[in-house]
Length: 240
Ligand SMILES: *[C@@H]1O[C@H](CO)[C@@H](O)[C@H](O)[C@H]1NC(C)=O
Image (cartoon, rainbow, N blue to C red; front, side, top):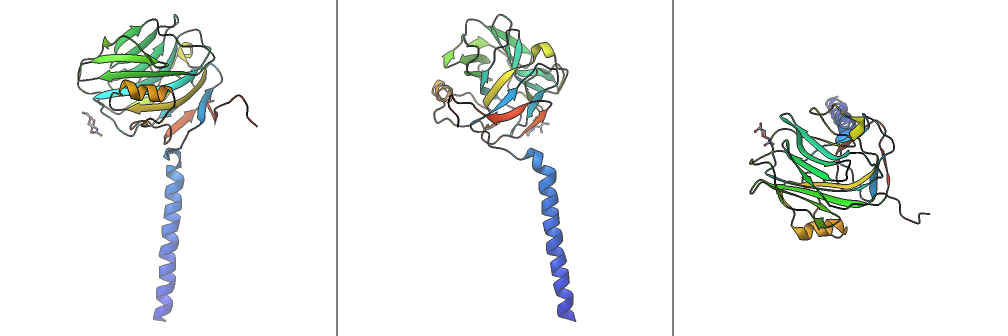
């Protein structure tokens, strides 16, 4: 009788453990990091809704580098990377102007960079950096550096970030403007909480061995898609 009592009890505990594990997996599934190597986000239409939120692995940054690749034919202004915190909607913003100039905003302090050529209907590599040690900001397009300019003079970008691609945040996590939305493809989105050396930026640009982002890593990315954004393989010229 005693042996019979122990067995069912043991069985039940094991079954409940398994049930708990399965439930935990289902409820946290959306936040599981995914490897997006060789893939891209496709934003196929203009809207003030379609976007992807990227969930960072760290917060409170004393320096920042963001690198990604984009492919578009948009002529008007558009957002490339929009990070907001509760106290600053443009905490780290890469933005393309209608005249092709690029803007980098850090904690609401924005600068314009002129004469950096990217190409329409081609993959372009962009990196933006901010260093709290000297408050300097810089942009790199396809391996070519911009002027180094004075940006936000502060020691840390603090607060829980909301990072959006596809739209530009005018409030913390929202108030998108269709006239600033991104249409086209994005890939290889990485973010570091330090400034990459010029060599590392060149390695990212050439897609050679580079250290993936420790804040956002395209090879292990937690993200949530809102609206129509398609994750698909990057196209090569010949795919069979
Ligand atoms: C980031 O900074 C905020 C405000 O200074 C603080 O409340 C929060 O705990 C910090 N987060 C981390 C992960 O250190």
